[in-house]
Image 1 (cartoon, rainbow, N blue to C red):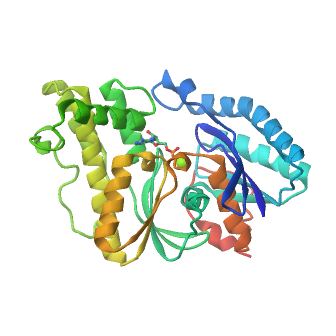
Image 2 (cartoon, rainbow, N blue to C red):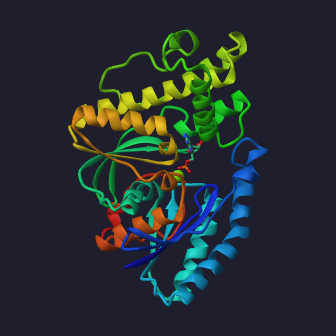
Image 3 (cartoon, rainbow, N blue to C red):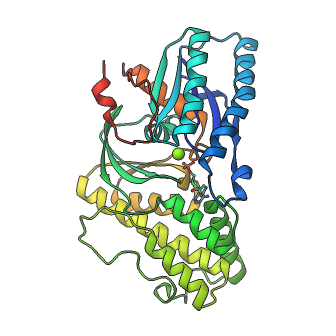
Length: 346
Ligand code: AMP
Ligand code: MG
């Protein structure tokens, strides 16, 4: 089965042509990072306009690829929620036009489920029930994955998403957008230059705990505390940027890992899938992998290049919907992130 997936929910204009939810045949992508850098974050109006400009060449390259290789698409899938509405509209209308042109069905896809589906691009299959963690620029949530199109949220952030916190922290540190990769790089440089690893640093002096210790059942995330602590650490204690980046990343990873451990204990699930842009971070990947090892849990995460927004993950989700006879009838785009897709099951 060949699926063409379209992604435009935020600041990546992307298409993916994927065979059987696994083999990526073509994956053109245009990232708007340079466009948004000077503003320190995404300006929605600029993002929509850039999608409009870039999808012309992405679509014509994809149509050329299809005709040159004499292949026939079975479905087209497109992210319809959640995301920036202006950006989603560009991808949705593009997908609608291609679906009419190629005379194939259109599958509306939930962006968060597409992030989880990206594990199929590594040859894995989503298994149910499992625990899911989504950490990106817009979301930091824990889910129980009951089945395709059927995800139950069990934990969410009280304030920023983890990626958003990294982006804002990077801005305090004077690093460029996007902040996650910049902080990871600075943290590595800090370790390389000082060779101190974690020893001798009193984290609490610089960055106090994020949340007052709550009940061990509490699965809520919060990143505003370390962000404020970082602000004062930089201002008052003249902490050098690489050391501050290192400490901020440590705290963030520790907080995410703590909630995952709680969720695994609470649900007793034996498969854990972590996805979203922040999973491109090696320290977080290692922390979650070690945690799962110690708890006898199977840890799955997409390849780094398929953690941030991309076209193949949307095609992979479309493949999974089609294979399971889920044909959501949603014909509109929305910023709402609820999972009411199960109501549309046919
Ligand atoms: P997404 O919303 O899934 O496209 O992910 C984008 C977010 O992931 C942004 O907030 C980035 O700062 C963050 N991100 C990307 N790469 C890394 C990384 N290596 N470490 C931490 N965060 C990252
Ligand atoms: Mg995303």
